[in-house]
Length: 187
Image 1 (spheres, rainbow, N blue to C red):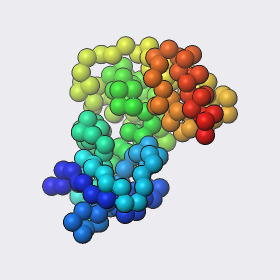
Image 2: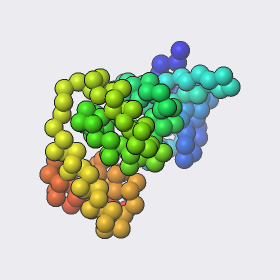
Image 3: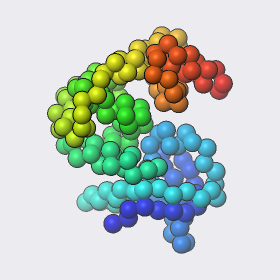
Image 4: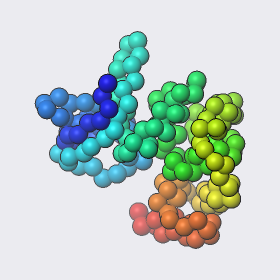
């Protein structure tokens, strides 16, 4: 029904944005990593949206691009995964990393997400593995997990470590850790 929205940000909270377009303010829930971006009140923004209709509410969820929206819609097609869980899952890692975890049946990666247990992770893998396309090598996924564990061992929280790792460009685990440490040290 509402596929995208373009307007000015009139409010930013820790869970949602309110975007005004043509005199109407739309409350749009967005992923945690999107909220970390430096949006300013009055800034123009354009989002792809998903309208989730329940018996007692109509909620809008916003995404930077269509690829992110389509992945979100795949996630919430799994029974037991609602829109809030879908946003949480999108916020923990880049889409390609999540695709690798699902296509290689790495439920341990998915269970590191708050609120996702072993059974739910297995259900996600079973229902979405075939939709991920070709099987992707899990070497870079293991490197991502190793880097995450290394940063946690150095005293960073899981969310801090994940945010820093999402900003790194390297595929090499050691280089990834160094880049993440530079990002974390710059805060």
